[in-house]
Image 1: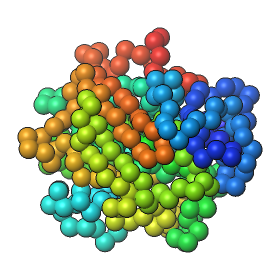
Image 2 (image 1 turned 45 degrees about the vertical axis):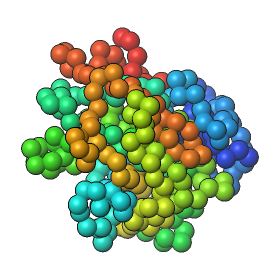
Image 3 (image 1 turned 90 degrees about the horizontal axis):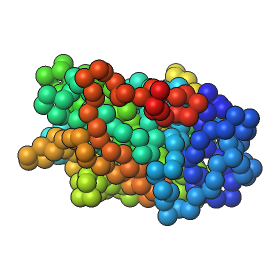
Image 4 (image 1 turned 180 degrees about the vertical axis):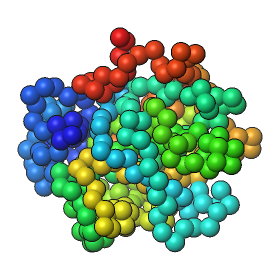
Length: 298
């Protein structure tokens, strides 16, 4: 696990996410907050203006867990007609759902009739080299490696009453968690609770907000999730989505083959993914390469 996390500590505040090379240093060991050694994984440093998504792989290719917080933006709770929660609403995504910039989001056969797959831009938090357990809110950010953009793709047919209100199932289909295109290091001068975030669908802005609208801030979320629970190094935490999701629109807007979804996070750049449909033979006609963390032709 440690030798597959795409992060690097350096004097720069942002690190490009690129392919792991055998024999490279272990990312989490070098990428701990305060460590200025520059070249875990031999990754190229990127500017804060963004990174070309087509040339990159995923920042965290094989997280031990993907933990999600739902209904964490005030305006999103309002648009959904739900009260603000008293505690973080927690659910999980299968870690195998993670893909990188430029990879395809695949609409699964079991969620394609009708198409009810939705987009959700989110701030993703990556836990650093030390396991976290029972950490206070005051110390929580000391355990964070960095931040990146995420798209919490969701099959509403399974999340809603028609599918038994199964949040984890609706969000755990293959390819349903794009991450990237870079890792914004936690030891830089970044305030994760004040970052602009947006989603564009085929060039049209459909979500536009700021993490300042979150009900529970990042330190509160990390502290809450660590209560009597160990968060392993490389754990990814999705912190919720703002208003503007497709199912709340009139008429509803859902992803369809040929769409391009862009999630932009201030200081990180643009995470771009195209949408395709699952073929009749099952999953995409490619195989998963754990060494490259991407789908490749067999």
